[in-house]
Length: 486
Image (cartoon, rainbow, N blue to C red):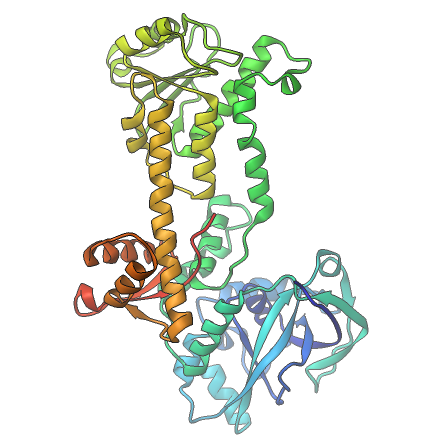
């Protein structure tokens, strides 16, 4: 449950620092005065840089972002996109490891040293940061920023809430301990990659997705894009309805249009699963409905209606041999997608010609699985389950196998998470996790099997767990990063 918050003070911070706080890259900022824990501030971005030029203040992997952010700041008005609550205020002086502090933040070591030449110490203020609601974030606020203070009274109180934390409680606490102890960052190379791709995310959706994945892996972001998820589910939930010719969806449509709608959503589904759909084969008279060229040739005939016509297999055979080379057609996996149970005649012809038949509902289940657990569907393993004849049961068997594999991994991630919560030991050995897993769940996996799955879950491409490599595999240690759930 969220809590309402009323804030009357803005903390005027350099715009790049505010950006880093709002994206979870940074959880603390530099202050010249001690901040009482529990005090809350609106985060107000300004251009002001003290002591050093920008390229001497910010590290190289953050400098392009800092330059871009400063260039976009209006000197008199700014949006308040977030607010922060002080969790701790720590004194930093020359006795501290400034090299380590620099590696965990966005500031150069020389900038920290320069600050300490001016004063004996400064304060590192740990902020729990929350995003403001849309209506607040879209309103520009004009402040007259004094030169000698960091804090300004807002023209009117800001009424917001803590409903939108940038980081989860756990992610923030892990980062806080890391910064308190000045533990070195675990993945500096990924932080560098994140900085490199940020400049192209506005024009490149693939880069934007990679940026988000890196943020989640690094612990800079734990938010799920529920809006995108909802949009995905909307079209996925219509696959079986379009294939079964729902009267509601068919209202005012010709048979041709209804068939085209189903053909189009089958194309979209196959592309979503990872097939490369060849757009030179777009169905219609004289051609197969859908042809996929990668990762292996796949030809499809789509039928929307109440049942699949008996001549569908012959139609696929004829159109395939006309539209494709003999070798390509022979090599290709052949699939019919349509409603209902195929007739015995259709099954017989399909088996003779090695054609699989599945219902729209089965395709929808596959796509939903891929939506919940991206890249979980192995197209080559799917191919093995596309048996000649009606193969819905075979494909559903494969879907259930994937869910079982995901469930096993989810249970193991849960064990790693609860191990820390129950013992306070953040990094656990393989043997400890094996014992905890076998105690909690009925699976009886060998130590080597547990280790293999832990390594898989700690890959940078999955990022559910972190791994510290030992002298041998039994001495590897693992720690929790994020849940595996759909």
